Image 1 (tube, each protein chain N blue to C red):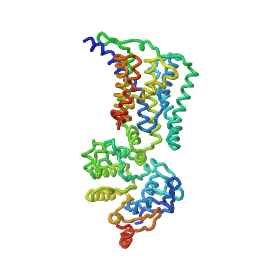
Image 2 (cartoon, rainbow over the protein chains, first blue to last red):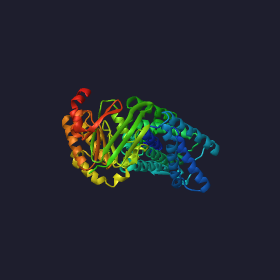
Image 3 (cartoon, chains in turn purple, cyan):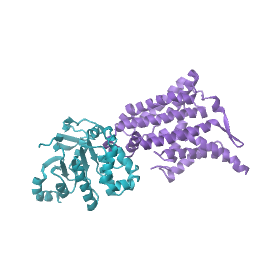
Image 4 (cartoon, rainbow over the protein chains, first blue to last red):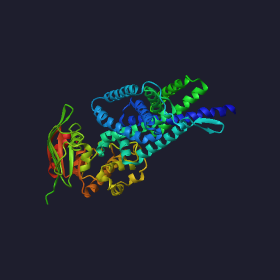
Length: 288
Length: 239
């Protein structure tokens, strides 16, 4: 009995944490699903949002979640511009060109943030970020719950957007068959730009919640990128639901791994699961 | 009553990269006509359709649609002007439902306002599509996919419908059904340019035909005249 009850902590933590992982991975999944582009700058762009929220909090005293009112449009426009002026042109050059550009953006962001903020760890420390809530006799960090709720809202909204709106359907169509999408009268260049912009908007949201949960440094983008990759590989590319489930699996793997084995085993478990999925079902659980 | 010229292709050269595919190709289609494009596999028929759709731009020569120069436009602009292509191999979106496939056909702004009435027309032409409207594209049979591709092409409210090898891989009964639908489409005032492997079928359905060979127009004219040379055509194409 005690064992089962004790297990509740890592399970709940894992599921809630999984929400954050899914939220981070959404943007990566969307960009790859639509444009077959591996945005290696994704993690750093998430961190950009964390630092942006940190700046508004420190200098303007605005709550990080509230600052998303500014953060989302900023990252939306940045994403639109990156796709329209850099990536769209790079597609015509070679297969590697967009990857190189993403890599370049990653380097620039990391160094820029290093210069601006120093390597010192920062955190979005708000009063509620340190609070906890309880289920029965167990207490969990409130931030984890907020992450999960945010993830749920974003994933569901995105799914409905992609299903119901013309732009959403166009994004879907362009990802399935570009040539035919062109024949439908879809301006694929512009659709790609919107897709990237939307991906960046989700990155903005995930950056804030990431910063609320964990301390971050300019190189935290790398670890969040690896996490996002893991989520996407497990859950399957191009599937919103898959990304969400993938996040859960990764979160649970981490917390349960830490519970049954050790803290250092946490990351190892992650990699083992990713490798297993690649071996058995490379397209991911919900992948096409 | 003279018919107005809808599409005028003037002496175009088209390249795929550095490889020339079309030489001095000219083509005129008047409003309301149904014109066939005939030729063997590598004659450049699909390239010609793709050039009209602005997927490729001619290196030389011009293309006019309703008097407007469309040779340098982007594909989405050409669709907005009223040219819709039903691609070879259907090109339906496999992981979208039949309904979504049709809806995406009305993506261009002008067609959106006509969506419901066009949808009704498509369902009347192809009741099977209405039955299967919630099914994913990839679950349809070949014939149904062709109906879907054709219906989808109509959703963009086109003035000119381009068809690339509609009958490829389909049973004769299905092909008959499709061509019957095409005749109905024509009655609604839509001009048609179709590529068809089967020479006899092409000459049976079209009023005019252009015969392409190795990237050049070798023969063109009213089908009534061309039919007299059908014996030669049969020998030529081994049909």
